[in-house]
Length: 164
Image (cartoon, rainbow, N blue to C red; front, top):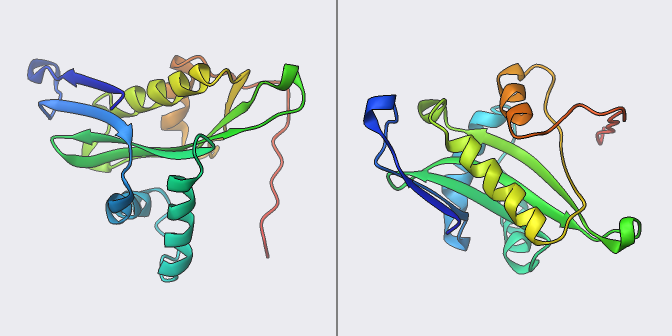
């Protein structure tokens, strides 16, 4: 467990406890349910492929992990953190955060902020020289959160190629 805080119901928090931690191997179903809110059009029918990827998360050591934020026991937010070896910057690794999602019922409660702070903390504790994330240009609601955390749009271009 990375973070725990008591919520203040007077400030609009909807839960008594928020916890951020690495997802357990038996929590794939709750993570997939959450990810359906991120990309509703995604195909989850090839369960063997998904389970294989999930298994890699849990066997990769420090390379990749799925973090979740719980609110009163429910999986309310999630992100994937990848720490990649690097041959520049003195061999210090690079962290990449992907698939940040908060369930619609739990948004604007501070869960994503806690989740992202935990991911960034893990990256710094692993001596990463930078943390990178991408955000869909259309998801402007998340951009303010990322900037509040210290992320900046930099002078680099992001390129993407998808399998046809």
